[in-house]
Length: 236
Image 1: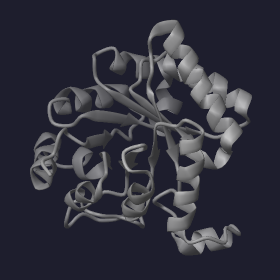
Image 2 (image 1 turned 30 degrees about the vertical axis):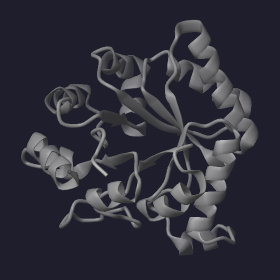
Image 3 (image 1 turned 90 degrees about the vertical axis):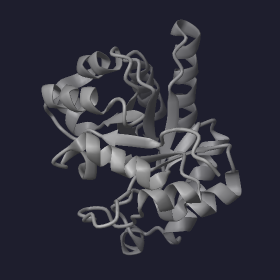
């Protein structure tokens, strides 16, 4: 099947606004979305997120909200005001919390016509079976990810974040009902570092990932733009 869109989300893991802007400006023609996470947000705050989003650059705000429903409702509402394209909540927060997030997003749409995608994080790619065992979670990683995806789908969440090793199981269960955003992507020859459940870009896309998240292999390359182009070519 031919690739219908550029699936690359570039993770901009920095606390430096000028560096983030430099990267987004140089890569905006070679990747589809830019992920801004906890490091950037804690340092620069919502105004900086809005500053980048206002350039017309699709922003993935990856803060993984996980709190009581009322708090998450307020956080999602505030995040919608930054103009981001997508954002994350932890599916392990439960159905009531996820429904509160969906309600906040839908209220923002009615008020300002803004409707970012809501993504539910399943099992972090830094975790493996022994980690779940130590936390008293008596399921295989794939089964836990599938269960959390089910809760997300029933709560009205648009998509999920899962490791590449759970793509096949979740796609089989939900088809196109849930967008799949997949971190833990490492081009051939790259170091895994703190990622444990990884896969190459081409493999993940062929299995059914809608978006793949790539950070350091692009941002720490000698020429980030060329690195992103190489990854896109490897997929196509």
